[in-house]
Image (cartoon, rainbow, N blue to C red; front, side, top):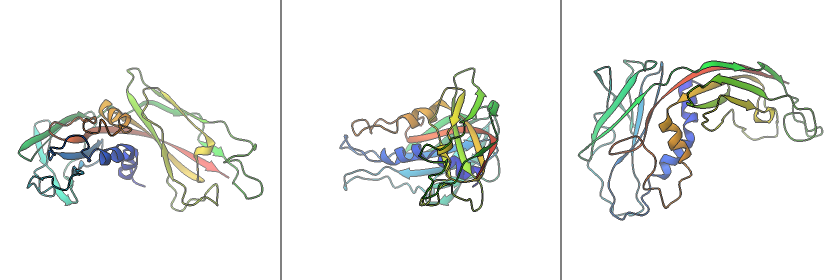
Length: 272
């Protein structure tokens, strides 16, 4: 799995919320504004998705804007980059990479208004360490139960991850199995997840329990340094129907998020 795919997983909870906030529930006068999803990762090409809000009413009037033909621009250091449409509301630009500690501004016109946002790329995590780099977990069997799940069998000590966080920044840990065809710890599980993560935290540590692993082999332990706007939208994903019309966003004349991420990586091997 590529880092780009991993970033997508990191943002899944936010994406699910954005899908929910596309439904207008309390204001009968529908205003067509775009929903933007863009996560700028240091060292990666910029990507962005634009979608429409979906009202409950079937009589809502949409703007004539084609979400696949917008002039989406990202500015960095006074240089304007126009992203190319890729279909389904997706835009990207392979001519430049997101730089570490860079500052970026988004701008495009939709329904006669300028949609805009700014973000910066967080610094790379500092002092990222792990307590161990291998862990032995007995495979689950129909007779013995195994050491990975349930039962009273021996469980290894949790993996302790630590990093420096002197200014209460937000971080999230993502753990993914990167084997091509990994052996499952519990063969009876149907398509168990190969990737999991914690919630955004302002702390400086995280423990990974043995029961969180579903496969043997090499795992990538990614630590993402987040901007507060990502954490705000993530924490807002439990918004109820009474407040869906006012979701957290860092865009002007739009909904969604335009934010930066930076990751550091460690590796862990799970043995039978």
